[in-house]
Image 1: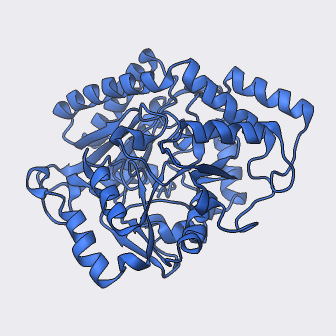
Image 2 (image 1 turned 90 degrees about the horizontal axis):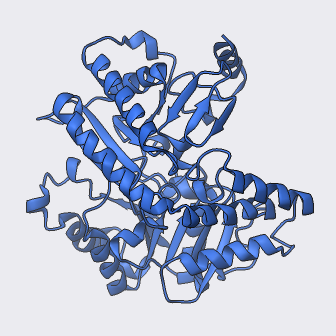
Amino acid sequence: MKSEELYSRDEKIIADCMKIRLFPITMKKAYGATITDVDDQEYVDFSANWAVANTGYSHPKVLDAVNKQMSLSSFASPASVVTEPTVALAEKLAELAPGSFEKKVWFGLSGSDANDCVAKLVPLATGRPRLISFFGAYHGQTMGSLSLSGHTAQAKFIGSGNVVKIPYPYCYRCVFDKTPESCNFTCLDFLENAVFTSVSPPEDTGAIIVEAIQCDGGDVPPPDDYMKKLKQICEKYGIYFIVDEVKIGIGRTGKMFGIENYDVEPDAIIFGKPIASGFPLSGVVGRKNILDSVVAGHLFTTGGNPVSAAAGLATLDIIEEEMLMKKAEEMGNYMIERLLEMQKRVALIGDVRGKGLVIGVELVTDREKRTPGGQETAMVCYQAYKKGLIIFYVGLHSNVLEITPPLVISKDEVDHGLNILEGALTDVQNGKISKEEIARFAGW
């Protein structure tokens, strides 16, 4: 088969350090929420390729915008050359982002360099060298962004020593062994009464960087009042409140930015993945004094180039014109309802959680003990692939099925994908998949 031949060639030549391979999927073409491999086999896509394809694959409006810009100029470096698409996109993002203060926009190429921007500039802008982030956070692969991260994928690397990590409000696996009813935000008491007093004095802390929904750590939405209370603590001590929306921003949660679900105004928002529907683009929109703190302090020759910016403008237009935020909220609620029904029939499902079309399904081998089912999760993803569904997994224990489909996905496609998923879960639960079948896929 062509797919196996291509996958074998990839194994021989493409570096393992750039891979998260869960099954031997290849791609010949893709449109909407459907991927077609090189053998012309079609798959329903529940991943959007790590939440990038929010507007679906190959949206005509994005292609048209890119082609028009390419016909004018294939490239210009925003580091030194001003172009209309780049300026217009920055103006649009500053208008959309919450916050009544004066804003500016920085552009890069990936979520990693966007988080790196914050890691570099905040200590300089504030004169406070320390930063606080969270266990379970995934902010990127560059040195600054991996320093902010608290994820298994970066645990082997030694990052900057100025970052302190605190527990994220992961209620299903509370590190303080609390329940939502008994918690009273113990994790925030820990921040104020332990972290501030012993390892990161507030007068030395420039910012707290948090994901509005912690994605690669397990697709964990915080309790409704958590972000407000965290922002209040930041305001109390003059600390910047910065939100990473690289994966869940640009309409996926039912709002343009996920933090808008919690009625909080951050001092800066980090965005990436879906902003240009797959073209390389990331950025930060935030307070002027942070992003103007130094000239030529964090720039990339191709970051914010006019072709990617044109794709970004088209992406925002599509999300608004096709009401994809409303669709994400409605379809997400529908999927969660169906998954909760599925949980009654499938013992492997320990927890279902999410907001809009970012949904986590945590698999366990023992519901009472909440024993992570990491191997079982890998088997489910592999079996789903064999049946025609693309779904990835995340989590510190590699046991959370991540559902982040293109926002244009139809109800029929959702139903078809969920039926495949239940079949895959049942097959794994009944022992129909062997360890040997997934041995060649390292995953996370």
